[in-house]
Image (cartoon, rainbow, N blue to C red; front, side):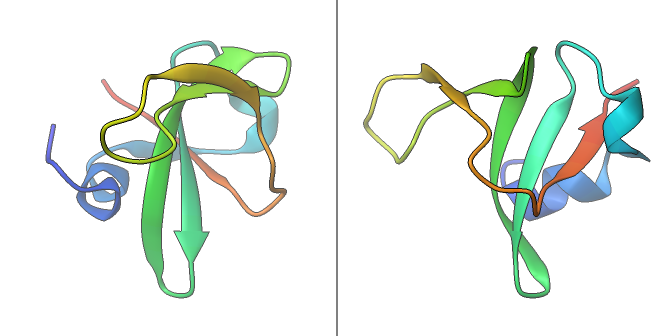
Length: 72
């Protein structure tokens, strides 16, 4: 898997919100790029690290402007 969220999004199969499943990737776009990614945990929550150097945590998806991707 590539390093950046943008590159990761390009390497996944894009799926609609109603087809998302545990373990799918949740991407947060900003403008024409994707700037952040988390792992879907169910019940509108994701596992993610808010910024470098912080612990991974479980939180609700805070935006409706997200994209979903699945690795093969």
